[in-house]
Amino acid sequence: MRELNELTDVDDPAWPPLQELFASSEVPLRVLPVGDAEGRRGLLQLQVTARSVLGSLTLNCGGLVVDDGWVRVFGGGSSADAGSMPSLAQVNAFPAAFDPAWQPDGALIVGQDAAGGVFALNGADPAAHGRPGEPGQMTYFAPDTLAWEAMQFGHSQWITWLLSDGRLEKFYEGTRWPGWREEAAALTYTQGITVYPFLWSEEAHADLAKTTRRAVPMREVLGVAADFARQMGPADPGFLGEV
Image (cartoon, rainbow, N blue to C red; front, side, top):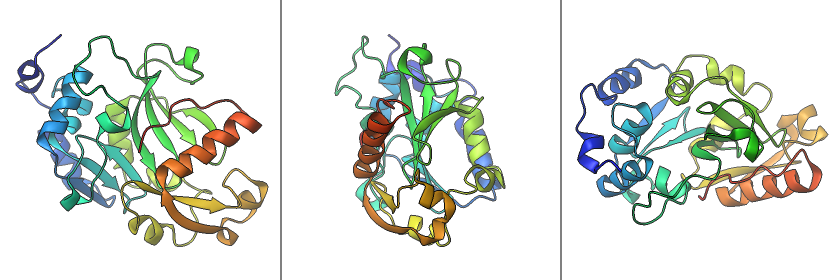
């Protein structure tokens, strides 16, 4: 076990380069202030240093609100004044006190989108947990297919990808409807958008503009998707995060 000061007091921390990336990005972005104690709790359990992008985000910010709220990147968690973004520790159900034996359930949930998509960082054996890709690579649970998809890069590259102009437009082509930006911006950070007919249905694939939508707790969006994935296939998606 490394003590907290060993994780925080490092040469070449990732936070200054991240701040430069945030400032230069053309993608709408809000960087939330962090709740200090929660961020440090998360960093200690992760046992990664502030030299890494994952550790630096956990320590230095409450989370990232990307593309007017369509994507949320979890960090150290924010206060009610900043909109109450859940922390990485809360979303992944970290133990209340440091536990050297604890590990995430196959992958670390690091982000979600408003439609119930989930971004996860693969653990040591993704295949054993029904996830594609290599250890340390990002995967995405797609709400329009109910399946995990490999993203072919790691966490730090994912942050750069999210904030690169045009990447999200291409990634979400065919899964965002007219007016999505305004609907996402109106959500709290524990809400998602339920879509009917469901995003994985033929009707939604044929014409997203004709779907009806409403804001509901994110746990409801994820719960419905997980239930359908288990019942109809392709497979049980496993842990999607506690929000």
